[in-house]
Length: 277
Ligand code: SAM
Image (tube, rainbow, N blue to C red; front, side):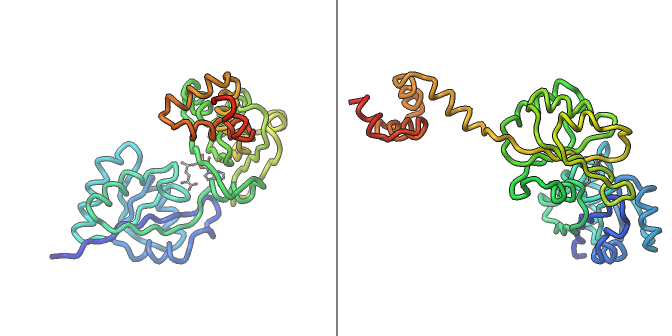
């Protein structure tokens, strides 16, 4: 029986064509087929690197059906590379579906890492890079957008958002409305001629941003208050008896409850113990 091929997830540049890796070029030359989000767009990249390969289309709307036919070909022994229009496949781009199905079908998946706008913007942002939360594109509908922002209001990690230029100001306004003013880095046209960073706060960004064209990543400082801080604050507004009941309803023992209340109220547990004997 013919050995199975492999699925390669190949990152391509996000602007500057020099940002393709040597390995990516080699894999694109070696595979039997390239599945691309936009075949015409990828053809330009391939032409630039003198790569001639059959291309098949694989985009959001045909992702589910196409995934199976691509994987059928891999099972027949073909090696296939998946690329998106720019950057890392699967990151706000098609990829996730085929990877899930490939895992089910026990097909080897080999990522070929490279450019990713979120990571490039984050590392240049000046914000905390140790922990971050990638939200990708927020929903287009304002109602859903607000909901996602509400859900992430107390996220303490640095937040990364992709946004289209014509929606940038509206999104910043909503962020300010729901999260308040915060530090922000607006990274524009990464790796390209008009690459630019505005490291400021949302109020200022809303004033100074003009001539909004090109591609943008928004990096926002995480919340200084966590969801847990909010919950503790709420519990501390309860009477001691209510606070006790709160933990009792969760099934904690008396000893545990006293410890938890003392921790919430930042007092010695003996003080709480006295109240309940
Ligand atoms: N898969 C890509 C990646 O790895 O970054 C992201 C693809 S997503 C469809 C496109 C969005 O990524 C753009 O709307 C923009 O928010 C961001 N983006 C891509 N290239 C960029 C660049 N050169 N500069 C700034 N943002 C970029």
